[in-house]
Image (cartoon, rainbow, N blue to C red; front, side, top):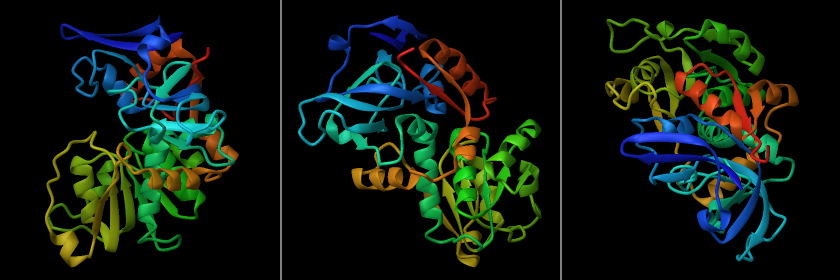
Length: 327
């Protein structure tokens, strides 16, 4: 079969479509015919020369996949079951979704809920899963109508889906982006307004800024997350999903002890099966067809993966890039 293969040798990385022998490469008790995959920032990190994400020297990439079980040694996952695969090392330490076939243990797969096709599941992918997990956590403290919500890194995978999900659920969404060219895209997803990062720097000479946001989904980390904590209202919550802006968090305890602010982290890699099923069920029908279509930048075959990963690595992608491994 043909697959997008990443190889590391002597400090160099090559990534290209090539023929591999499925019986030699793939391992696991359940075989899935992959109908759709998608590109994530993590995939771009896997092929980066200085990246430390990949855990093996030869790897079929793709941290996401959705398709149908075609062979199984596990009665809990019968032939014909529609499934999604993400986390558990797919595309980093276990061969992933950039191939027409994928194998894995049954416990690593999640049954797709009724009403969510393999194609639409990959419009969401790991990014959409993370976004919905963030939304569900946020809504434990904030309901529609409670106030303005902020989404940072809003043109990225998690950020763009977060904007669409929150808007569809009736929230007042503000998208933060450094890219003026992305405003139309974000407004089409349902953002009520788009702001620049400088607008978080309220009252920089004080410990706290003016209380503005009831909550936030932060996909950036670093100084951006620290800035969010300063401007959350009393009882506000920040949900942290990313660290592209840095892993360090330079803040104070003031937001937590004077405004009762909460900071919650989201992990999509080791989430338990029950939580995965809950989140994927929530994604079924979560946004309308217009918003779902607006989330998609383009669809490619295996040969289009390299260009898509380069675009993600440059940070200039607007919307999701879907992969159909059979073409």
